[in-house]
Image (cartoon, helix red, strand yellow):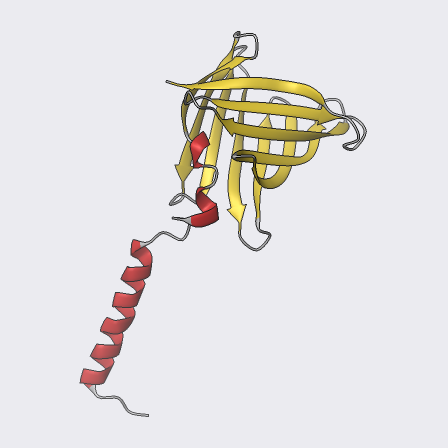
Length: 168
């Protein structure tokens, strides 16, 4: 099939217009991709007793497709997590690495917040437990991050960390 120069130019312009229209709306701009946005920000973190636990920065990166967490504990330890919505699985996922821990969790919205759960590996101890994290947006603008650990694969849970995030 032979196309005229005019037809080729028109097709090229149509393709470029379609590409720029789709580039104008990032792929993670709405819907389920926005469910964890309440956690994004610069935070000071205290435990349930009010003692400083550390500082945390949660940044929306890659056109809002991933929340990148950069943690610094009050004792000086650090860690990072990568949080993203996986549309094929219909779940939120987190990979945490730091403080001698490796954590893979998944889950989704829970009671107005977010709940993720998965295996927690203690790298220096060679053992694995189960961790469940619940993030709740509080009426005063803070976020509560409540982690519970299970030694018996989810039959019983004990508080592992209970942190309250206040925006800087």
